[in-house]
Length: 291
Image (tube, rainbow, N blue to C red; front, side, top):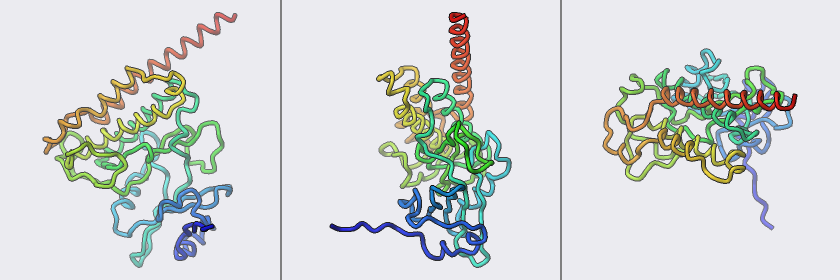
């Protein structure tokens, strides 16, 4: 019987002086990230689970992460991260606490929780765009939620909050949403580009991917499994978010085929408020019926 070898973290990373100084010991099997050869974690059984990612010293990701560490309160949905740089141009280390998983959202299967999740990730994307940062690989797999109601090992992590991760493809632009011309889109993003679409306004592409992430989140939610059919209103909302992908092929300047992240967040905020109001009224009605 052939034994499958398990990837091990590189020895230089295991013995990195900055990790040893912090008493961070990487898990022999790479924890839960062995499929990513530059992302490793400490043991999932540790009191504090750390995630370590190494990137080239001159890459944009480390600089963008540093930019986004200023004021981590919402609407900023960036994971708290320490960027460890070396003086000899060796790889930078991104040291983070483990947050959670993409599937930790909407566990109760309610419209209130589903739209709160939609709202939070739209809010996080809007904040990136406000800082003129385009993620360019925004996807369901790149948003994580710290599960509410469970104690967390890092006081900086807010329970129930969604966090945006993985800024490998991200870029900072001189112009903001509504003014940035089209760029060549990355070829290896998680969201599949519509056929023939190679160039697009980067902010508009992020919003398209936001709609895709919300669609996946909805499909996987207990709410969708319980009602066993697609909500026509949610489907139309997601279609509005993603816009006309085929019409984007002629967009060489700022793209207006879909709303900006700010408008998406505003609309989701109104819908979330309506569901919260309805939920509160329903609970009050049930209370008075019982008394």
